[in-house]
Image: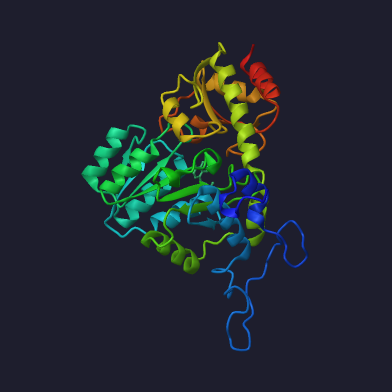
Length: 384
Ligand code: PLP
C-alpha cells in the first residue's frame, strides 16, 4: 500500500516527522539550524534561494515550525513570535484607535492586564465578558459590534469551557473576528479553526514546546489573505517580533512529541482529578474531564482524546492550608507555567490576589510522570 498523501497525514505522523523536513544538504533526518541573518543575491541581484533577503522577514527555522504548526492546526498559515504575549500584542496592534473589543473575563491574568493597559492607551473600548455564558457573549456582540473577540478555552486557571462555534457565529454576525487562545488545549485536543475561530493563539512556551526551555508564541489563521493576517505579518516583519533560529529549532524538536505528551498529560490529569475529587482535604476540583464539571458535555464535543494538563483544585482551610500543602510536595515543582513534561504547582492567589481566585486554589500543570507517583505525592502533601 502506498503512503497517504502528505496533506492527509494524521497529527501524530506530521509531528513525529516534523512535516517531512530533513537536512537536504547532508541527508540528516533532523532539519538544520540556520543562524544567518542575511542572504546572498545572484549576479542579477535576485535573492539566490527561496526569496531570502534578511532574517527579520525570512527566517528559515521559523518557517519550518510554522509549516508544521499550520498542518497540525488545519490552518492556512502560522506565524511564530518570541513569546506568547508578543503574539497577543501582534493581534491587538492591528486595531484602529476607537475600536471596540470583547475579551473573556478571568483568563490568563497577563493577557487581561496587558489588554487593559493597551486599550486604555489606544482609546479602544474594552468589554470583559464571561464567554462560557454563550447567551451573554452573543448579547455583548450584538450590543457592541466588536472588531474582535478574544476567548481562552479551557481558561487558565478557572478551567471554564467556551463554545468556540457559538462564539464564532455570534461575533461574525456582528461583523467581527474570533481569536482563540488555545494554549491549554493544543491542536492535539482542539483545532479551533475547524470550529470557526479566525485566528488561534498559543503560548508556545507551554505544551507546544513542552520542555520548559523555550519562550515562544504562535498564531495560526483560517484565512491567510484576510486583512488582519496581512497586517500582523507586515507588523512582524517591520517591527521585528521574530523568534530566533535556535528557539524555533528547539520548538520544532519539542513539537515532534506533542501528541504523545498531550495524551499522557491528559490521562495523568484525569487520574489526579478523580483522585482529588474523593480526597477529604479538597473542597472542589476544576477539571473539564470530570462529569460533574459544568462544561464537561461541551468539552467532550470540542476536545478529542483528553482534557489537557491543567487542573485546579481548592484545598479546605484557605491560603494557609494550600500553601502548607505546596510546601510538602516533593515531585511537583513550585513554579509557574504549564504544559511541560514535569509537573508544577502554583498558589494562584499569591500571584493574582485581586482577581477573585479562591485563597485555597492550587493550579496543577500535570506532566508525563507516573500518575501513581503524582497521586502519592499529592496524598502525602494533603495529609492522609
Ligand atoms: N496565554 C496563556 C493561556 C498563558 O498561560 C500564557 C502564559 O502563562 C500566555 C498566554 C502568555 O505566554 P508567554 O508567557 O509565552 O508570553
